Image (cartoon, rainbow, N blue to C red; front, top):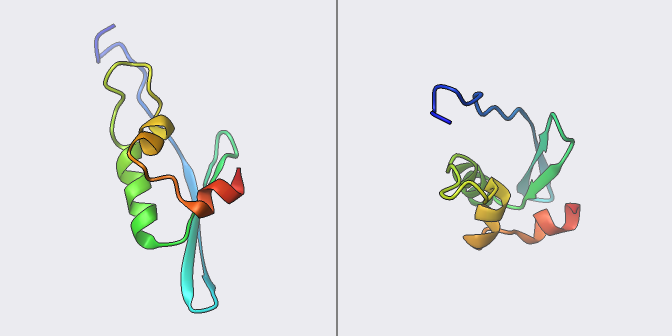
Length: 81
C-alpha cells in the first residue's frame, strides 16, 4: 500500500494540567479510546509526545511500544494503568 492509499494517522488528545503541591502535573486522554497517560514532569510529557510522532519502522510496533522501548515509561503513567 502506498502512502497515498493509507488513511491519515490522527489522534486527538484531551490535555489536563494541574498544580499539585508546588509541581505541575499533566495527563493526556486519547479521545477515541479513553486511554489515559500521566506525566510528573513537562520533560516526560514532551518525551511521550515526541515518541508518538515517530512512525513504526517495521509496521508492528505501536507508538506506545516505542515509548516503552525508549525507557520513557514514567511512574505516573504506570499508576494510571
